[in-house]
Image 1: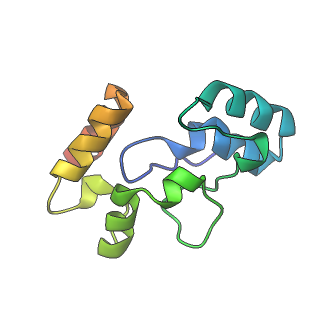
Image 2: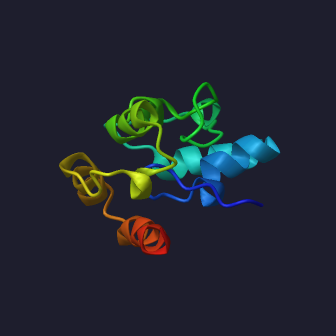
Image 3: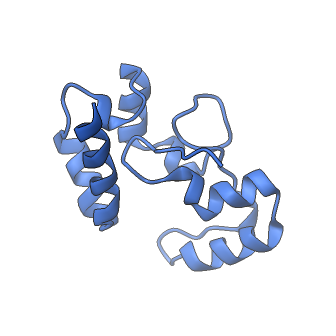
Length: 115
């Protein structure tokens, strides 16, 4: 499977929401919804649908479709934030801090080094 990198550095093609959508796996949808839900952000299995955030007009998780980093990347027409002239901006840094996933920053750093 081709690796799909989100604007923020998440590897969409490894994400359970992406995998559940591509394979139409309702068990994985239920499992992912249970894992990701919280009192603040309840998620139902039927909400686990995503084809990757870098493609406009495709199925997305609700919170991904409203992501400011995604909106900015689409507006700028970059493949992901590693390709942006303003890398790494405050907006991206804020998402990294919020998500607490250092590997997504590392993924974009790796891409930047190869440009």
